[in-house]
Image (cartoon, rainbow, N blue to C red; front, top):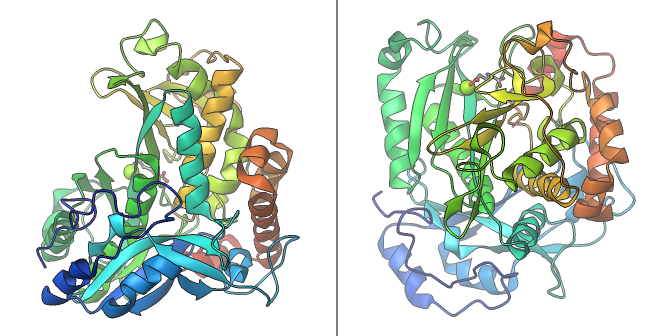
Length: 455
Ligand code: GLU
Ligand code: MG
């Protein structure tokens, strides 16, 4: 399929259902006809719930215009679903009542190269009367982007995606970590994956074999925060489709096997104003400007609470341990892969948050990171001394060692509570607490096995 998707040239709908709350949807029957002519028949409309699952309603292509104007119904209850599809409840969300309207953002409409005939678009969620839904995660992310814009700041972000691929119960390749042998073993699979991503308009920076058996990583060019979150969803489903087509099982859980290096989903970010990268050419540490330093300090300060969003599964804490480059310490350093916050200086300067993993809802992550950064800017925080070398030897502070601990920080965080609002905050606490209870008696092996293939 060579139609580029929403990230490449898109379908030429520059102002279509753009950044506002999707109030006006022009009548574009020509668009649908063009898509039909190119062999598409159906569109997957996705959003990501609090537990980190991508939920979907699909519509025949002929219904897309209607869906964009009036939305497609879906219960709000999915925001209190747990990783095993059991259901908890929270003060604002839960129970059988109510319905929401899912409205696709057609700017992102992408023909799925790994699923011929299918297209995909992320949705925003609305009440039936057309009001934006206060617990819509994508809307939350967009509102934090606006908050930054009000201060003249633009963020560029990109998620790294790590996954483990198996054939049956065995890793799908046997070559060594970072070894060319793995690329040779899985040449057809990886080649088709890269081609599919390109055909969908995604700009891959790198693909490489990672440390754990059968593990790979993909990274992408930075883009706007909501776009980076949309992209994270699209990338995962593309990997899934291509893996299944090759008879392989992809695992996106944070821990595939206890005691082994897990899957991270690190977030890269840089701050911009008037076309200038504020992470470089300043007077602060390693060239940071006086906007970048307090912004990153705010993120660093909030990391224990941010983990309830970025490392949201009990299994996340099997991964988040020292000496695995997962960023288990609340410190920062220049190119330090054991620090939760790694700064990359020079041309293309940016910061990488390493402690987040692929169980996270990427929209919650990007929005909450912006909120934490802006709070740091407001309090004019300075960064502590950077850490060089292994933080384990320098009595640096460990990040929470369990989801329970992270949730305590989250519940106490005024910065995140104010940004997310009550409905989302309480749903996050309810889902996390219920997942802790769900796995209370589980061994690490049982926890890893129960979660690794659920995302
Ligand atoms: N797999 C590691 C993690 O759990 C990250 C390795 C890397 O630095 O890319 O985050
Ligand atoms: Mg990696």
